[in-house]
Image 1 (cartoon, rainbow, N blue to C red):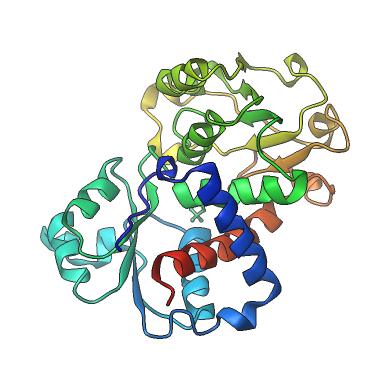
Image 2 (tube, rainbow, N blue to C red):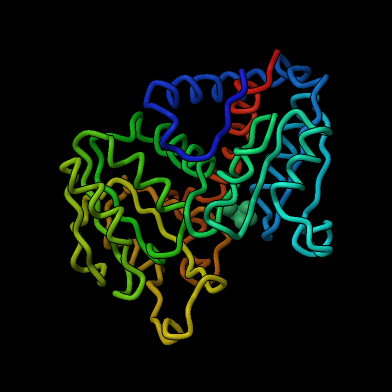
Length: 301
Ligand code: CP
């Protein structure tokens, strides 16, 4: 059976819980999984820069005994430069690989790739639209620390307009009972209306705000993000960022956890890194284990 991973929408709560149980088993007993992909070749095709997603997927493939073929800068170093369109590239690469992990600057790229691919397409970030495997590792990190991702209060902060990791996370939180969300951003970077409408449709309270002081201190999860400078329009240029330093973090209680998909610019002060509430580096390491579990589920024998 071929399954694409295009949107977090395709994963039910039960699917995610099964994935997270497998992630825990892989984390604790890695030796049992070291030949799961021994006969598989996986292509990583990245048209946008990446450190975590590409390297954690490639580490995941290799730790499962699989083989990687890769273009880390497909926009400049693949035959896209000669004018080849994405459909044709996928039609070629699916002849070489058992799955294709695709990052692209166009919102529709993963769907276009899936429409012509004979092997699973895994969306590793599509424009400002979605980043479903990031949402998986974000939810896994929350689940690992809180035992659930429903019945929690969240602050989503930073660039809620262009941040695709926020968009994938909101889709899943919109299906989660008894969640409350505060959207903390400069007004120019507010969550797009379609996501707010989705939350309202599912009776998830959403409060847009622009100052930390407007938010109650007993929040469970802060999910902070960088300003996506590469997606900004000229009119956005004077925007003030939300900065989380120790003083800002201390507005919240000791049990609050702080996540960030990384890379971090200046929106989290480095003085916060040693605080036990700061989980972003553990979160990025979880990404490799969650991706091992996903690849085992999709391709494992
Ligand atoms: N979080 C994330 O997608 O990081 P990279 O852009 O480094 O892959």
